[in-house]
Length: 340
Image (cartoon, rainbow, N blue to C red; front, top):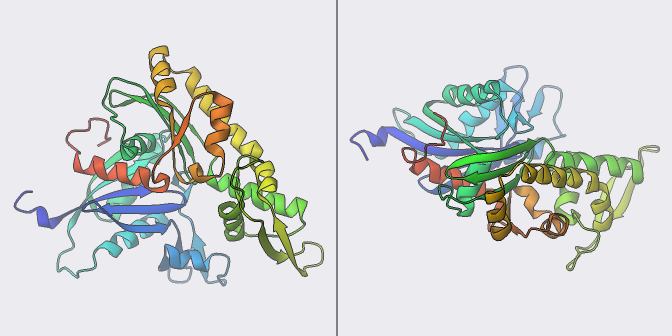
């Protein structure tokens, strides 16, 4: 710690499509949905995170609820900047005379283009960061799970987030093969909305579809510990009269089948490109699942049966990437794979 270290605040940011997690002093200080509500007349931020999520689908003409990230990358530059700035303010509870300079490590999808990297860097700098380091999500997930990423052995991580599924083989502190596909949690939610509309003639929004996914979402139509049916309430598309429909996990497993198959294909494609020595390590260690999608019931079992390699779900899959980003922040000088 230097003489002026109190003037610098170090934060690790998992800037996700669905949730943003900020770590400061080894603690998770912010864990909020990646949403911001803006007043269109004044262009000022009205709400952020959970408060903004509660407003989703309920705003009037002057208010707009925005998700600044789509498919893992910044889609709305202004909203992203306001969101990062607002979430960092949640940490600074003490009103200091001079706000501290920020040193940030932000994680990004492994398939990001130079333009997308620049958007994340610029948003972070505009939000007050003096130093910005970037780390690829699968690398952060591997560190967060507890894998020794600098060891001379192959480990495979599948991080199923809100906007992207990141698949990477890591060895000697680098990514050997990687695949980043834009099929993830948001697509599963969209599949459920489409299914409810076609199959049950009932209109549901993003939030309700998300609730269905959390309560009865499954990747297999036969589970050892099946959840109870979930009652969905909404307007009938033809009559606009209110209806109640019980939804079973088998139905949801059927409607998510196509998207889960695309994730399976991407994992097989990444394995095909893996050098044989590393492939042998992966078969011995198994493949690690992280991200919110890892919590989909029966997904690990389905992938293990399909690919013939054991799949392990990380201890805290939702926060594995954030924890890895926090560890990278503490070891900025040691880790050569951080993008400066």
